[in-house]
Length: 288
Image (cartoon, rainbow, N blue to C red; front, side):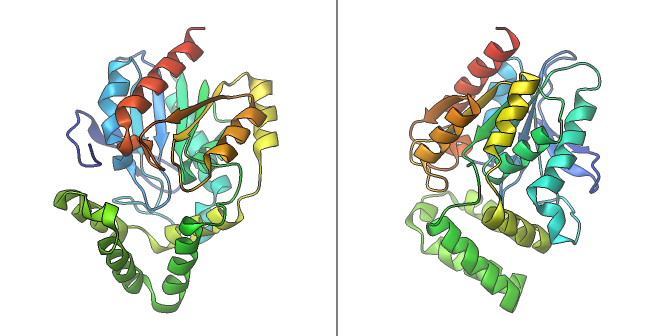
């Protein structure tokens, strides 16, 4: 399975304070609960394509969005507008519009999108459940992913986007796991990165370096609003360590689950197990 898998969702645009957002929507019924799916850094709506039909089959209407500045979506020129508080306020507004007809909205954020989903919840998004997928309580910890982030920032600042694209493609070709991807998927990844807004890369990198620990504030919000929460990650997550995410779930009084045979992107590495977990959990929230 991959980001370019066949699916039956249709492409739509959603209005936002930063302009129209490209999205994928798999309609179910006029009264089906909505699952709003938010991608992470250097990602896009396509990260969720393997989940769209299984989620719809479970009775939930998935809407996978691009964040501003991501693949095929324009974005503002100010890097500060890509920090979690700004994007979270935007996502809260989108959730409000989707919930206006009374349909329950469930919010899921993956990786950096999890920091955005947290910010949206703190900004009073009218949601009936929050899923934090492969994300952490604070800034990205030291490790290979943060080191790559630092390297990319230095190249971008010194030599611009063309040099960063060349570096990214060179490193990909030296990666054994990358070489296992089919040619069409590798082409998609490269095209997506080339079409990412430079301000998006700068702003989100700052967010990944500087995001504070807001878990206690989120815990208070979830408790006061009775919003249930699920924290989930791949069994071998190499961004925020699994014990860190487990501890975050405990602090939030949230459910915690580990997706087998997955690293940092269970949406593509084991979508079958992830979809089953999401549908079962979300049903329990709406039908206790």
